[in-house]
Image (cartoon, rainbow, N blue to C red; front, side):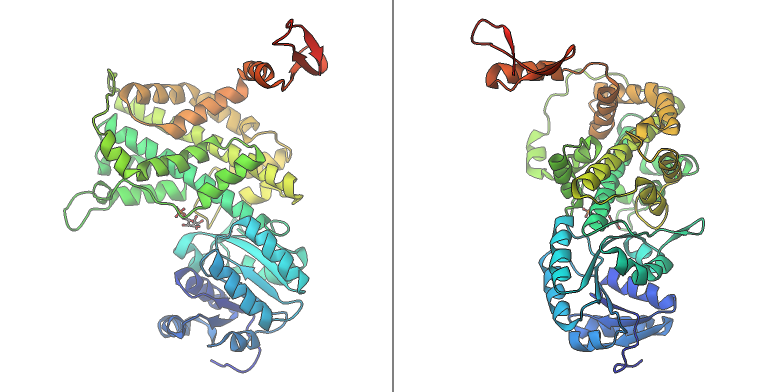
Amino acid sequence: MATSEARAQIGVTGLAVMGSNIARNFARHGYTVALHNRSIGKTDALLEAHGGEGDFVRTETVEEFVAALEKPRRVLIMVKAGDATDAVIEELADAMEPGDIIIDGGNALYTDTIRREAAMAARGLNFVGAGISGGEEGALNGPAIMPGGPKESYESLGPMLESIAAQVDGTPCCTHIGPDGSGHFVKMVHNGIEYADMQLIGEAYNLFRDALGFDAKQIADVFTQWNTGELESYLVEITAEVLNQVDAKTGKPLVDVIVDAAEQKGTGRWTVKSALDLGIPVTGIAEAVFARALSGSRTQRAAAKGLASGVLGEKPTDVAEFTEAIRQALYASKIVAYAQGFDQIAAGSAEYNWDLHPGDLATIWRGGCIIRARFLNRIKEAYEADPALPSLILAPYFREAIEKAIDSWRRVVVVATQLGIPVPAFASSLSYYDGLRAERLPAALTQGQRDFFGAHTYERIDAEGKYHTLWSGDRSEVPA
Ligand code: 6PG
């Protein structure tokens, strides 16, 4: 361990669990890692527990930390997103030199990253907003990494990030995403899809519990089984683990003693806000965010207990058949969630001129990250076959999968509705699909109403241009 020479290839500041694990991951891959934390206690705790895993440089002050790095210096910030990140960036920027690279590995809001990148560029520094997914375990053993920022900085940084990332079929789950905030934008949408996927899994769980009367262990067995097929994914795998967990205090399944109010740190909400601005219907993600909000409205929910359900339908009797129907509904709705997420990425790319490649994202999401899943290989193939795919749903593989699932999907939504079981994401995904494929939507009426009360004009199906009806006059039509 040394403190004076500038010999570390990477510095990590912010040594909570994610930062510590990433630092260890770098060290285990043979890099010399300079360590820094606001309070030295965390640095020493890391060195004491894991100092033998590789070559670390202990530093106390920012100046010492920066001086320990070889040039161009590379510093990875792993602190809480928001003001804490700005404070660390400012301190580092003062101590660093033109050409050095600052990487923000937190869950930053992409518009903050755009602002920070511009501010650092004005000082000659390269700023890389890098989405990192995979939680604590991924950080240590191989996360998915989504670095944005200047292409030039990726030349020196990329090989390091690629070496610590998860690898699938020999391909690292890390690639240069695009300029400025694109890495964090893509990570944000990743999290939005994560929310949708979790909500869909939750709805499936709810149906097993309330429509089929399964206990947690029985439901865990179904998810374990599903994880051997086309639904194979990290989230399905951990669902079985969570459902199998028994509470030591009560002997009940842990899931039955956890309060049913979901929390959120904000990335799902950001995804929906951004989708609203871009005009992209991410209905699955939005329902997931709202379902968490509803679950958290504990006062209202307590007051609403006992509200009438109306006459409820019969529970399904063919357990095997309904289990398979739920699986199909989950798969089809999941395809919709991904299709919507990829639509948002395409829209973000166009809005900010990022030139993002959806196939690359599908490739790097195959491993390391929370939404890793077998079917990402299919998404990768779909975009390889047609990079300009208008919707993922239209790729032959997914189109067939949905056509196979559609009857079951409808049945699940109908049965859930008849039983009074909420399935907001299953239902809204199905409605989205029906809306997308509809020959004619009620939007024609909306346009007529808008023209009536606000002279907002409309287009005709049989002529070019815009038109207005003189609603408060003789109701003749005039070109607008
Ligand atoms: C990941 C996760 C990670 C974090 C979520 C949790 O990709 O590793 O998405 O970023 O666990 O932000 O989000 P919520 O607290 O909003 O559920």
